[in-house]
Length: 155
Image 1 (cartoon, rainbow, N blue to C red):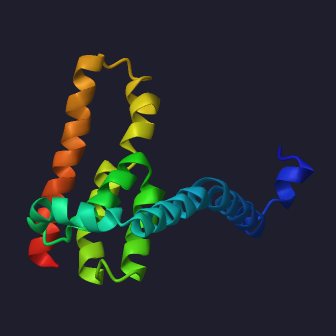
Image 2: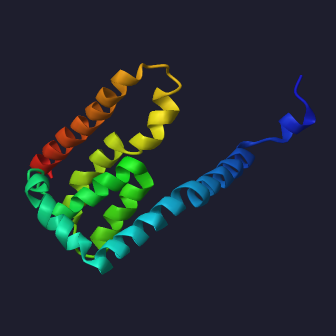
Image 3: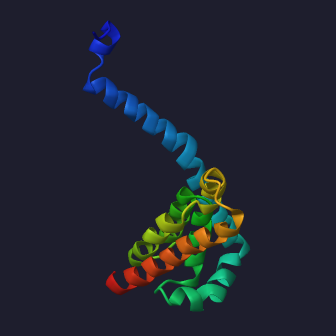
């Protein structure tokens, strides 16, 4: 038999509780990463480092139809997916990336995103021998590169 507290719970209560949890996740977990990403991009721009990065990585990123500066999206997403999305948004807002460029980058952000965070959380707990960790990371990076190449073809 259900208690009175269980009987009074309805779909609206579940929705409100889910909305509260979602708000907490976005404000406490995602927002700091995005703000950090915007700050880093602005810092790199002010110092003139973004132009240097663009020049150095232009040949590599050109394979995927992207400007050299797009490497900053991939590097930051390697740390946290929210950071990768934040850097992409910042570069888009600054006119460095187009909507097509962001479309090419999005699958890569998800395929290789937050690898450093997940390396200790997932691989460490799984008891996978450390000699295989580099292969797990490389597979994610290879998948991201394949996805960007395909997206460049179809976008």
